[in-house]
Image (cartoon, rainbow, N blue to C red; front, side, top):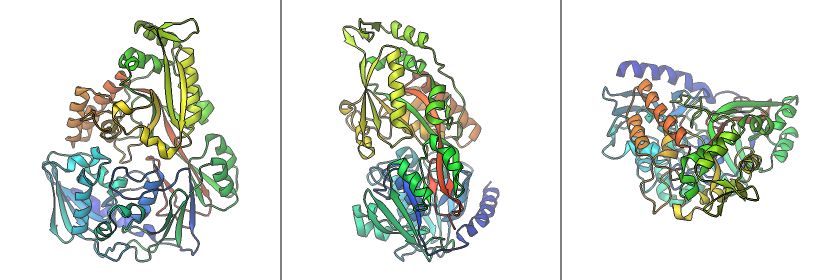
Length: 530
């Protein structure tokens, strides 16, 4: 088992080497993003905020031990090969030699162990705990020699390589972390193809070429990541040649850009699924019939056609069809009569103004949505408001700026200021188990914020049990079966109104080659070249 795996990885490593070779230019590559880069530490309370801009910067600054290629296949990066023990608990990694951090310090086993221990420790890294907790507990990370490390987990952990390839798996300079403290998030140091130069928070990040990069000299003198929130402005800048790449293209503009002689449009089905999350602390939503009624009330097809021009797909599971562990588990067809029947069974009756009432209380709720953070967030929320009106629910929309949005979610349950919220989760390690655990594993306490993204405060002991079994299962077929059972339970419990999986839509100037758009919604520029 060890020999076969090691040989496969050595072959992959030979394919990775030339990726940074090729033409270079003294001009910068300019990327206009819908949200700004504000932090770039791989550990902390939140990672790479604001999402996804911070992650996209981090994939330029850092290298991981293991990485995803453009097909979401796992390939070597700072680890050149690895083996796993017969019991699935100990993973041994050979590390790349002659690699230095941007501050001139060496990458070696000590640096890799510093990074891993920092990620595993919940005191230093409070985010992405479903990824890193399985490496902690009674597990160990140990140095075998200067360029070999071993990770031993308490139980077998199937998605370990996916965790190492995640954005939070970028290896940091121990020297810089110790020197800068909290300031490291705004002046990061990695081993990647581009090094930090300057951050104007909320406006622009500038990275410079790492001439000493182990994979070859990067193509561009600099990468400039510029915050341009308005999509019309981003498109105009691209058409005029003032920027090279833009993200979050409105679907209605795709045909226009496809007709431009100097522009390429890249679209990919994504892993991010969307829905309206229920605040399950609200009494009216503790009845599953109400939650299922809301699901039957939504006509997803016309929303996808009218708002997304068919650049989205209705979902039949809480996770995307492209995620590891996906199985279809059901549908909620558009059925207003069924929705009204369920609401009636739950005790809600139409009032004189058409709004449902129960025990003298009108069914009035608040819908929370960010402005411009999620694709078509305002339009989707307005459509949902209209669907609710048809079944007798009066909804008021609360719009918040992207930077403030997360503060409405990551709070104790008694501080939630919304009834339902539009949310899209991206399992950025490609794994459906991570998706399900992050959103639906029970929170350990109600006195603090949710452990990860379970801000609905959903809890089902059977789901918790199955998720634990899936994490400890290395066999892919058995793990898929366990995750399918979780997805089926959650789907029927309906803590969300399930909507769609998006398509990522990015545009670039034709002369820019090798721009990669991953299903995990990130635009990867580390291999871009003129």
